[in-house]
Length: 112
Length: 112
Image (cartoon, rainbow over all chains, first blue to last red; front, side):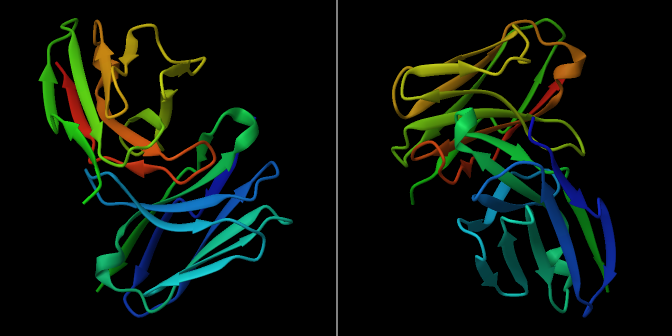
């Protein structure tokens, strides 16, 4: 069974600081997704990473994928309060009929 | 705008009283999914449809059933809700397998 682990599970950081969230997965996949979830809300798609070495950036967030290391990172630059949310990575395995395997989630709080 | 719509957004029901949640999509996607998300947990896939082909996850309780009468609509029926079924229920769609999933706003179900 595919396992997807994120760390840290909880992250409290000050505005203006940088930090990285890690997503490790246990089996080969070349498709990884990052989602954001605000409290009580649904999942909002942030990034779709479709190949080894893929890097995507949107505002203060940058995501990358290393399929050989089975690792994706979500880097936060100069955090602002509006980024406070829970972030999930999800890995897609075509061999299992398109089941998304979600990571454990990282709850981010940005403190003014 | 093309989108995924869920109704109702909030539902309160009594223990054992059947409830139906609805999902519709204007994306004309082939695949529709239902997820259950409990507080502070990752979404858990219950089942999915590829067109009219239904796939039930092995650990989805028999209490949960689904219908997809046409491409646009999908329903989640909970026949006899228990207290443990209190959760957010998320509908998602994807154009095909191994594609990005787009999530609806969710239905927050409370079983009393």
